[in-house]
Length: 129
Image (cartoon, rainbow, N blue to C red):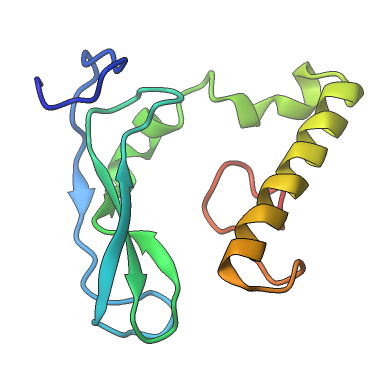
């Protein structure tokens, strides 16, 4: 696994993936890759994940995405969001919420979107919903 980025352990296996051939929002097939990266936080797998943006509706998603059978590898029992509200103090959760709002405000400003127009699907525990 010599092609892994610096700082990545490299002892995690590659996991199975499921192909994605169309946008899950509008069904469009035209688009482009906009980002790629590894699971730096938990380092549960060695896969390089690619984010694809639909040319029709602008939705972004993983392409390919992890196979459903691989979800226990990506979200192990020690995954932080399972017990976040039980293990972190209210002050830490408040601070995290503040940082999250600032992060999203910056992202939306860069995209030219109003501050209230985002939806986070499939990331963590869904607390942004």
